[in-house]
Image (cartoon, rainbow, N blue to C red):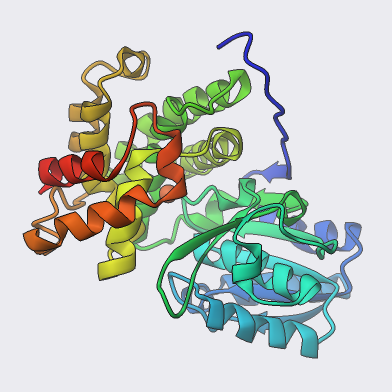
Length: 366
Ligand SMILES: [Fe+2]
């Protein structure tokens, strides 16, 4: 691996620390924001984070327009609605505040607001034809890693297919990580988002696209997440664990930019598309089986008996352990395997991944 060529781009400026949210107004002003679209889901409104962010931005003379009409899995219609709000208010910047859905929605609105068309036109890599508005990403869950990535995951409202739309121009200018914003996340989010981040660390560590830099990010991410996740599950108010989870998720997000993901995400995504299973719950069911099936000695560098360790972490967090628990009918497995084989990310799995492989994995996980 040491002589393999690569081109590693590290995108956003990272601002981290307890109480650093107070800098939001100054940071936005420093980037020249005057009218901004604040994309934040309704859960964040209830938690008071939106009011706090609005106050800070307004104190710096920035006019704030809110957009919150999207769900956990933002789709093409929701993005179009956001574009209309952005156009009406003539915004010059966008802030994504919340979980992965808020951050992905912010990027997606930026694509269509600046380049026209709809999200299908941006499916794939570097499809934007115009410069995008500057953005700040403020994650309020411990897991997404979306703040470190140039990809937005948006569902097609008609086909329900999850489209990965990425472009170097869709990178946040600044990612602002403040543990205080994430400590209040509900248990279900803490468990699913945290486990998803763990799977990002494990998957990026072994893909065929990994390189010397992503390797360092994957290892550091695993080191932080594997220690902080059980701590946070048992002690949700542990601020240090929240901070470690945030940083671990950010490191994993950086690794994904270069390394992509593997068979876990390829088999998990059809479960979300077909049954609406939360992303992290689908990941929890599949990850230990993929690790066992890949049969790589390399995993031992992370932990001995990694698949068992991962299954134990999922159980500790109360996450589902089988497809049966997710109420997946066994007769659906061949169909799911077909859909999994079409997932782009499966191509980067270290062991060749196709429909037969996906079926074998679903059967193990049933
Ligand atoms: Fe994920």
